[in-house]
Length: 98
Image (cartoon, rainbow, N blue to C red; front, side, top):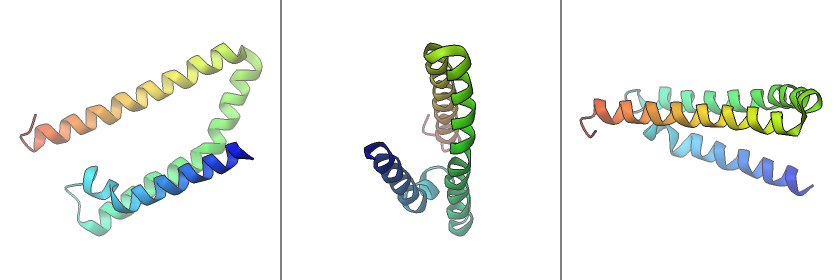
């Protein structure tokens, strides 16, 4: 029960950030309506990817063990963080701040 509550709270916070913060941070060159729609699209993709990730990582955990599951999930997390950092750095270089 606590895990489900925390997970839905996380989605609530992400949805709030998608409405308020993401359009100004990640979609600077777009007009405000397009930026907000793009940020909500990222929210929807994350919501849709959640059950797919559960199936994939559940399969990896069942057949490869917990160690393989954690290694695979950590690798996906690190790749995502790297790409987010690269896109932020590219935006800063475009603005002449880098």
